[in-house]
Image (cartoon, rainbow, N blue to C red; front, side):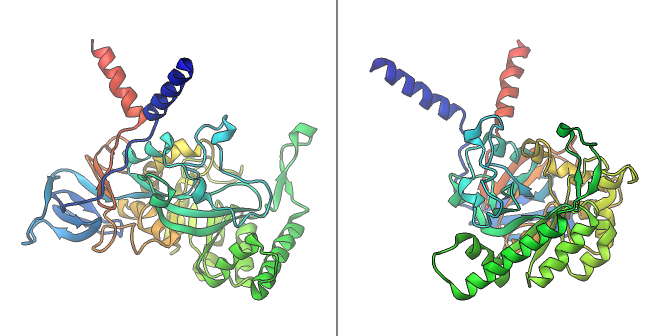
Length: 430
């Protein structure tokens, strides 16, 4: 019994030491930030700004020259910069902690058609990966499932919470569909050449999708028994309460996905990835379809593509009048999500202004996710989700946060990495 008690105590201590930082307390008094350069996220910049928020909501955003009474705690931010919290869409944060540990991996589910699978209830607010986002200004994310033809339903969360109920900003915002590829590669493990070739099953796979949606419509029109949760989940696409995020890269797939959404009378379509979206920019613009663009720090996928295509693609789409946000899916995507602001910074070197680049990870993304009424920009009435940086937040050399707030709460910027840094800094000072 004594050994058992010691073991339990050891596990408890270990759990505490490896837990995420305690979420911030609810805002109880007004906070005033004065003197900073405020980057509003909507294209505007205010030098020598005055920002005030109370009860988690922005109450004033304007010039510090305004003759308005300052309230509560006053933060002198002269020489610093204030930004709205960055938003990471199409992320698997909190769904996987250690890839090699199956019990910590909840990013996908068995089966091909899973529109009813809710990523939100699998979201781990205690994730050490999640807490490492905040020191770079990534304060919100769209938690998205993976796998299958229809992966499931995503939700938008803020990244400082006790549990998934507290975290939710918008629950069940979208259903994610992995569009069939019109190309396939040879199976190298069977000795086939590893080159692109036509996918002969492409038309059949689209027909299967069409039939599945037709069955869903028939079910929801009659509400037959037994209850079918996948079909009921798809009903949100038809009534407009959910958005359809189609993960597709190539020109033909994007075109077919748009036509599919129109035929199914889906009200809100978003293209995710969109590697060849520049080839069908007119079609995207004509149908008012936004794009969550693939990771900017990528190599070209085709031998005949421009070497800098991934870097300049955002500029091409923005100049075509398309609503564009940035996403970070791919290799080591969870840990790399903290680099989201630097993906936006890269677009500045390839044609966008800093204000346009900032919008890619703030207001534009908020609009694409349908949460722009509460987050995405520094505007009166929106959530006080923002941070103070010592320098340009899109530049990895100067993005050094002093303070951050989510819904008005002062949040911790400590992480496992900062703890290790402090520990070994002390060691090598001796």
